[in-house]
Image 1 (tube, protein in one colour):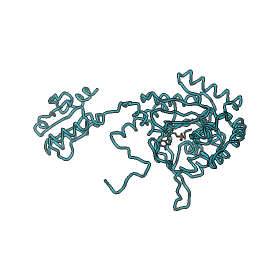
Image 2 (cartoon, helix red, strand yellow; image 1 turned 180 degrees about the vertical axis):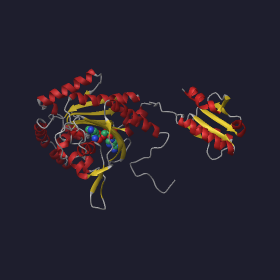
Image 3 (cartoon, helix red, strand yellow; image 1 turned 30 degrees about the vertical axis):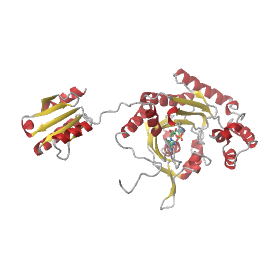
Amino acid sequence: MSTFQAPKGTYDLIPPDSAAYLAVREAISAPLKRAGYGYIETPGFEAVELFSRGVGESTDIVSKEMYTLTTKGGTTLALRPEGTASVLRAALQNNLHKLGNLPVKLWYSGSYYRYERPQAGRYRHFSQVGAEAIGTEDPVLDAELIILAVDAYKALGLKNFRVLLNSLGDKECRPVYRAALQQFLAGLDLDEDTVRRAEINPLRVLDDKRDAVQKQLTGAPMLRDYLCEACKEYHEQVRELLTAAGVAYEDDPKLVRGLDYYTRTTFEFVHGGLGSQSAVGGGGRYDGLSEMIGGPALPSVGWALGVDRTVLALKAEGVELELPATTDVFAVPLGEEARRTLFGTVTELRRAGIATDFAFGGKGLKNAMKSANRADARFAIVAGERDLAEGVVQLKDMRSGEQTAVALDALVATLQEKLA
Ligand code: HAM
């Protein structure tokens, strides 16, 4: 062991488990690519104000969990705690919204950082795949995104996840509700922190996990009773579109989410096998975010799915992903001359698309075959100088143990046929 350990709340992704993470990222992004979302990559850090204005001063993410730093030049930056504000910033900066084709549909995949109390499923460095559709207000777009996430989970073989759905209203109806809720909260016996939260963002008090608080919230005014006609109609359309697509969802009038930019449609994907960190993904509409960060009005919607938690959910369900074989063929040279010649064959096999590895370091036959077994290779090719002089290699089927001589110039075709 070295002197150093991975920092608290982080972990290393190492083979063979790391293959599942790649497969999850791939499975989540595949439906997005098929639906016209283009790949975007933004820096790992941004101006602190982008998140404090966008995600919201009152949120835990900004007030407690942001990793901030001051550069030698005196600029304050934050490691990105989420992707939406960055992606919108990049779209605005690069004028993607002016290219004429709205919505601008983007997907991303990367690392995010939150200084949270680490526990199972909650890390300080984690990974998300996300999607944002910028510049269009259309319930079909909200439905599209939810359907794409559900399809991704299904493609992975995940079953026990649920879709929670809510509407948070818009700039017309939410302030009216907010005032009503604040008035209700003012009559409760709440601790100092919660009273402060009720002043800044009363909706987040509804999300309080403590029983004592939840008990007092019985009879609190609910946003759905305050939605304006336009929001009601919009939400109804999203619900109908989801039903038509065969997506089962649950109306959750208390779903608030931990970021302040949401308007109208909000949703969360939760999984029962994860303990308290049950959200495997979440998102919603953020019609006002662009203006909050200095852009024009660009109603938008998006989501991010947590890769770490999706992997945990798959494990909890015992889903075995179909991962591509890392090694189809393992090459074992016998002797110095054979080592050089057979390495040429390995390169040829790899260029033909066959996953091939090699017994490096001049291992003896016994050790080399152990390595072939450990690599879980389907075939081994063994060749000594005499074989190579005759233009053949010995091809061993690692399952049956059967061994045959195959001409070197027929090896690629033979293996391609056997592996097909
Ligand atoms: P979020 O709900 O904060 O939303 O994060 C999305 C997902 O990231 C969560 O459901 C969870 O799976 C994963 N996640 C968040 N924090 C952690 C953590 N500390 N450890 C492990 N996994 C974590 C957003 O980030 C929004 N930007 C989503 C969005 C996109 N809304 C609109 N567009």
